[in-house]
Image (cartoon, rainbow, N blue to C red):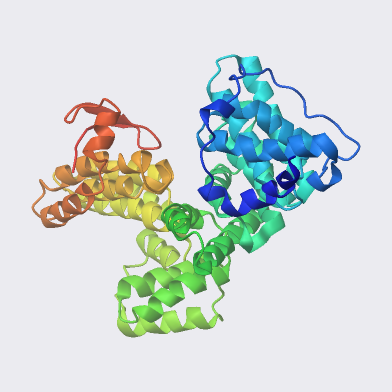
Length: 475
């Protein structure tokens, strides 16, 4: 009577996007949200439809066809008992499709989100992880599944585990897939890794290994031409976070700095700013004086960018250290000079220079702000320190959020506060106003503000490392 049913599961794969809605008469009574039941242990945990016979095969095939429509309609309670028949009956389906695992996870995530019972929540998470494990049993791909687990823990179930477990799962994912790592792990793994490196919670060897793997994955994924929108989002976030780690001595090697900064010099061979920066960066990255790039940059400095050195003494030593890429040593020597001199103008100048080294070379934004504010104390009428602090805030989108969206956009408000303060100084007013115009367009939209019941013109506290009250503005 129902001989044709046996091909329906295969056919549904092909025409799934065009399948008709289930008629109301076929809808069973909605099942109550169930308590979690452990996945049944079978002799063959990956039974396929072809392994079944008779009524069991027919019922399981029907379940696979029917439950999918409920999932598409987001009727997860109704989908659950039918999905369960399909999944428990033949977890491997026809041996190739895998959406039964995704659908089961979606169902249990819905149950998790719609209950306040903490025990049920914990049980639903356990079941989701068991479904992931079953997927590995049936179809392999442990690295992909490790990434999915880590992603879910990080974004959906953060309180259910510790950051070390999430970090280990991300490592398993990228260790297994290398430069072909799945795009969805890049941003969260970058965040965890960069925080651990900055907080000195990892060895340099481990930090170096995974930073290098992330760079390779970003390069490969971007060039692949696949998931273009996702990789566009990734490139707004991950590279700036990884570049911010350049201030960690010995994290990146000579090859990294040569690839980035010598290429920058080749594109701008007459820019003293770039020549000096590239020369210092290559030396910071332990490129020796016999390195061809270092030699070429040194020759360019002498030919195009020579400036008479200051007289012998602490200041001369500080500049020498900076020129040779010894940024920490240079800061210490500049600090000593600031303490020794009684000239307020020099205290201002070199405190601001320390702030700029922390910003541009070591990428330590809190320290940069600290020294910019010290500089301001020595010369209150200058807008330069506030210009720098505004740039620090404006550059913090990837540090304080995912690179786009609300958390990354609200940093523009305190940045504009600083630019407006800087604009009171005629010497930097033009640059400050230009920066205000630039970042005004990147503020949160009026719709984003209103959706959060925030009023334009009201006070707003920006957290992250900024920790400042600001004024809500709209573009």
